[in-house]
Length: 138
Image (spheres, rainbow, N blue to C red):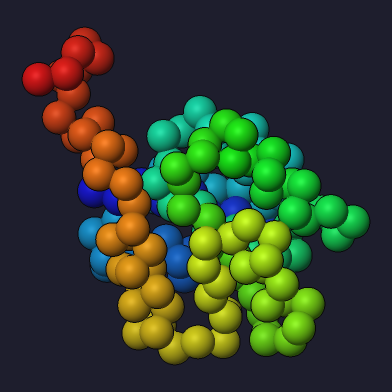
């Protein structure tokens, strides 16, 4: 099961993403309403996909913020959530995001983006499903 962390300051948006992710048989392993919390929790949570609202990234250096995150979890797929498309928001891809999703997209379109992102999660990460309860691999 794909493990997803949602970082968005709006509780109603987190709730909507949580429902969509559950419908896609993905596990929500954490949520944050601020960038600092996500930066601390994502690297220790064995997260496959991080959904992060563009507005949570530090305005002065979003590329530095994502680079810092990637140091702790280089294989995590980063999806930037944006409220509306404009040149600044599309810059999400150029700062190190793997994908961006417009919050104005239909649920079906968002689901397709999430399925595609889940398919790109490295196979080695899914091996944790086969670990025994004492932490040893089968």
